[in-house]
Length: 550
Image 1: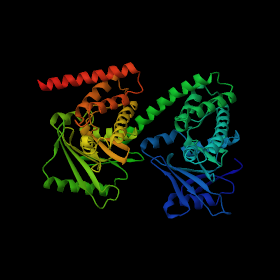
Image 2 (image 1 turned 90 degrees about the vertical axis):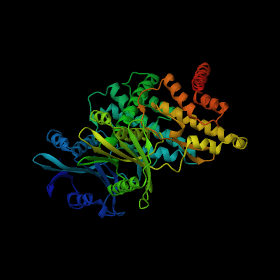
Image 3 (image 1 turned 60 degrees about the vertical axis):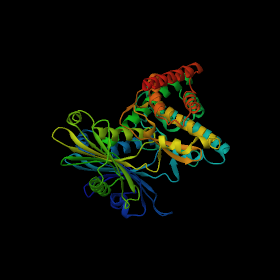
Image 4 (image 1 turned 45 degrees about the horizontal axis):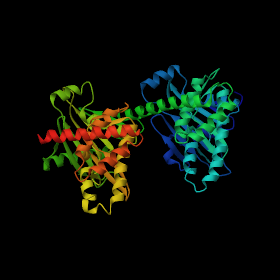
């Protein structure tokens, strides 16, 4: 500790590297508390866990610094702080140990803590900023679109080789990273690599194969999911360097892929639940009988303005639509003062007595739609963006809900779009365009099922079409009430789903186009299975037509 000095300023206890005793506690910390007031401060990341700030200085002056200020979230953090060291201290200690192992990490300069009766109230870590560096995943995505792809490929292979050697060395030294992804690996130039965000790192006496696989699975998800050849090269170099892994690269690859798939599914489930609690993108406000879930870009003032508009709209317009469970009224309101969302869709839910009782042990219909809409967006399935949910409590459960989403009025409903753009007299001129449309629609269904999403009530009237250009479209799934997530969709469920969807397609779509849709949908399956699948659908449609005729 000879190179470190202990200081105390304004209730904050500091451990500072010699040479920074005056600047960090007195100048840097003041800027970190009010970054918006100082032009040299750039907020890189700000969420409920931490605020990361890059503090730049003029050239030929002080070195640029990177500051991480960790936030207290709730009382649980207070209890933990009595028994567990702060995140700032843990990362400072980790960085020093990684430096002793000669691994490329930022130079730690100081950490500070403010405690009251042993309870942590504030903490921060200050490290040396790595100039002209960028995250590895950003570097790969930028370079993949550059015109000189051959030149970049050689650089990428050299970088992959260096990265494989570094990670093998990391594991050989007993470093279990636990958060090893492209965002936590910085690259400067084309060869210099640095490991950052080391707060989750653990040092172990022996790196088991399971720990290695978990680290590499996380790296695979962030960088190599769509680049298997590059990943195979990485694994072979890693296994040549690290002799303690006695697995063939093919078996190693399969084990990593299995864990990586589980990580992806867990990540999606976690992100889906964020709309139900306070997080980086979502907020919750409760008062009286009302509870409000909202996206943070949808401010309280805009929400109140929208609710006032709904009240006025209800007085002027008595018409609504009836939903399957209780009465659902749908409104479209305009808020010209809001540049982000000048027009909104509003769904108002009123519940029966039984539905109120059900909401005591589960989700109300409005909350189900709020959760499902966010679940689709997390899985990158196009759906109306949910902005806010207002729930009004009664004596027995939820008595009313209001869900506000973005307006999709600029898109046509599928059952209206097809007759409008693919009339029989225009089929000769628009044949190629129609083929692209059918293939695009089939592809959207395939992607839906591949992501383990089943919309049980999928109809043409609930799908909205956004025309991107002459031969490409985006299909939004509007009715999000009956959705199953995270379960593989069996062939029988796909069949029932497509039968119901096929029955709602306008008659302008002939049997040839319907078969084109089916064959494009089933093109990844064996030929016999395709034929059997199509026969079942055609037979079921005959039965439906026969029953309707009788």
